[in-house]
Structures are given as C-alpha cells and as structure tokens.
Length: 158
Image (cartoon, rainbow, N blue to C red; front, side, top):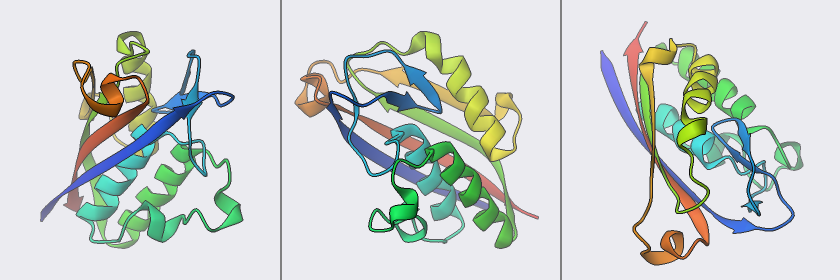
C-alpha cells in the first residue's frame, strides 16, 4: 500500500533569531518566529509524513503549549515523526519540498537541506527533492516578511 501526504508551513521573519531551513543555519538578517527553531521545511515534511500515515499533524505530537518543545530542533521532531509513522506500519519512500521565499537566495543550501532531510527520513538523498522559489514580489512572502513551504511525502507499507 502506498500513502501520500501533503504538508504546509509558514512563518514570519523576526530579527534576533537564527534562520534554520531544512536543518541548515542560513545567514540572513532575521530568522523565523516560532516555538521551536521554526524550521518551516522540517515542519512541512513532518506534516506530510504524519498526514500520509493518518497520524495527525506536528501540533498534535509536539504542541507549542508544551515547554519541552521550546526552541526544539525541528529535525529531531521530524525524526520522532518518522518513528510514529514506522509504528503505524509504514516507511518513508520519498519526499519533495518547495520553499517559497524572496530572500535569502537558497540555491547553494539546497543540496545540504536535501541530505539532512534524507538522513532524518531514513532514505537515500536521491529520494528527497528540494526546490527554492520566489513569490515574484506578491503577498507577505514577496514583501520579504516570511517564508512558506509545501511538502509531499510518499509512504510504503512495511
């Protein structure tokens, strides 16, 4: 049996925080607002795999009301979500991610993001796609106020 899940996340920029996307610290004037490290890439992929397994979402497993997850490493949350999925009899087959942000430009970080995600998901790097797009100046993303991420993941039954 094959299952497909879609994940989405968005965060606003804020000065005084590190920018973390796909497990990579990326030099920028601001980071993202969030209870954890606000890694929107890891959050979207987490929701995609949990959704594919019909196992809720990131907020169900790692609520922002729980102080254990304050400033948490979102790649660790993704690894924990993979264990939830495994506990339901599935393994991750692949993931594809689109990061939508005007600045900073992410092309040079894409291979490292894909490799980090693959490691967390337990799949080969060739099974993870990461793309960076702009929003062509439109909306909150286009104005440079934040980032959005869309992810799709495929699970296979064990």
